[in-house]
Image (cartoon, rainbow, N blue to C red; front, side, top):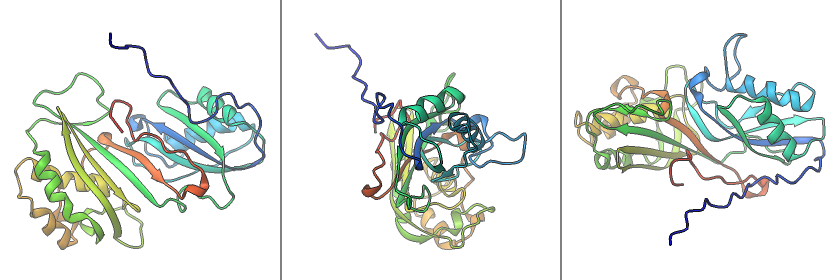
Length: 285
């Protein structure tokens, strides 16, 4: 008889560890659904952001103000399964207290997954060696009745094979000006893209992209361009022409935010951060 019992849950952070850590630089890993927020970055009063919501919750645990720095500032509506932040704290708290206490004060669409003390030279953004995003597309003629904030619905048939084939010209160190958002503040349009893969599982198409870093709207603009190929509106070699043009107006639309997830941030092993399944939870790693 097939075993139908649920798998054993093995948390990466020690739930039994109530021993306070020395004050110092803390790192946290968290996930969130971005639909209710105007992006990661704290903004003017009255505008909801993931950063401000997280800082408010952590301040209640610390009994003092907390300012966090993240690995990647996601846009309005964008999700994350493994965002990484750091902050300097002058109080002693255990990993259990940061995770469970923080989650007690957070809304249900933001969840802390892990907490730990890290070396003083750790920086959530500048210590990162790579980042991975996933873009999820529900490809079916009829709109779904559930999970509208979990993926983007595209009703016309798409060829994941053609999308994947055309995307490979983006690998390597490239000038991604054609996929750069108008509000991008980066000093250079060059990024090193180490992997891009488009795959299909039933009605779900996944675009997974790994790079050392990303420009503003870069992943969503790449996906919007690949959608043109997948729908048969442009040939696969058109993506190469768009890249060479260095002209944003030559590329496809900016794909909607709700399909995008920050799923992994890579760091040197010496920092001791855990590696989580990429997620979201309803997908294989």
